[in-house]
Image (cartoon, rainbow, N blue to C red; front, top):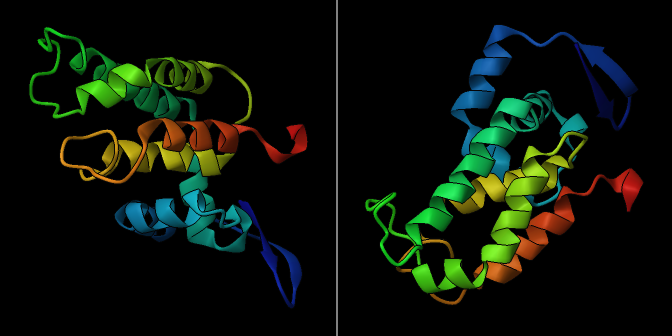
Length: 156
């Protein structure tokens, strides 16, 4: 059961169906972009389902481990993940932010889905500031924005 905020009806409850879950998985990238840009999860069934998936402990651990793999790939030997084409200089320069972000994802407690979605997109964007070939985007700035967005609104 999820709660939705509707303009005309106010608040409504709705049961999540298997079809809703399948649609949320198949449209993950688009929904992640919307959530990363600040869309309210309660504004649609699919955003709500996707937000629930992103903030689960298992998904948070996957994202934290992926950040760790990127840091290991930036080591001078680069043996841990030779197929991961990270921008070694950028990753090495942002290692404090990456470590902090990974620790925050692994910690218990609520996180704002906007920040989790930003981390997911950062890791999934092969043309983004984490990977070779990216120009014009600063990894440290995007990491800081994701960390800031992780803090739930009631704690700000």
